[in-house]
Structure formats: C-alpha cells, structure tokens
Image (tube, rainbow, N blue to C red):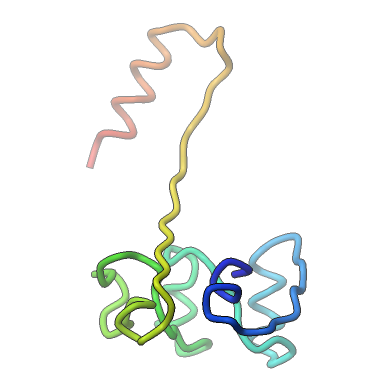
Amino acid sequence: MAILAYAARVDMTHVPYKGAQAAYQDLIGERIDLMLDNTSTARGFAANKQVKALVVTNRDPDATMPGVPTVRAAKGPDFELESWFGYFAPARTPSAALTRLRAMFAAP
C-alpha cells in the first residue's frame, strides 16, 4: 500500500495490523478508509458486499474479480503487484514425502 500511495502521490496514514481479519473489521466498521489485500481473501468480502473492490494490482484484469479494473485501467499510477506463495519443508525431509507433497499440489 505504501508503494501505491507513493506512486499515486497520495498522503496516507499507515495503520499496522497483525492480520487481515482485524483490518477487515475496521474497514467494514468504517474506522479505516481502505486497505490492500490478496484477492483470495478479499473476494468473499466483496461478493458479500461488505466491502467494495476498487482495483486489482495485476497487470491484467483478474477473472475472479469481474468488473474490477486494474490500477492502470482506473487511470492510477504505473503500478503492478502480484503475490507469490511458496510451500517449504525442512531441508532433511525425505524425498518420498516431497514427491507426495508435489503430487498433491499439482492435483486439480
């Protein structure tokens, strides 16, 4: 959010939270004005009309958030951000267990 605020030349007050759930409580309760979160979490709140999705930070529109423009399409700054999540295991995890985990993650 800080990068987006800087790029948009907007002055914002950073309010730190230990997790998204507390931030959503304050957003829904109108104690904060906006927040940035992963679409996988935000989608449910937006679908239930508890919050309004303003933009997505992907380069292209997000198929799971129909009708929500990208930052660029909304005439915002030249900004793009996508999340990446990785799964990690201890270095000494047996190869058979890693093979099984990879197969589980690859399954539809």
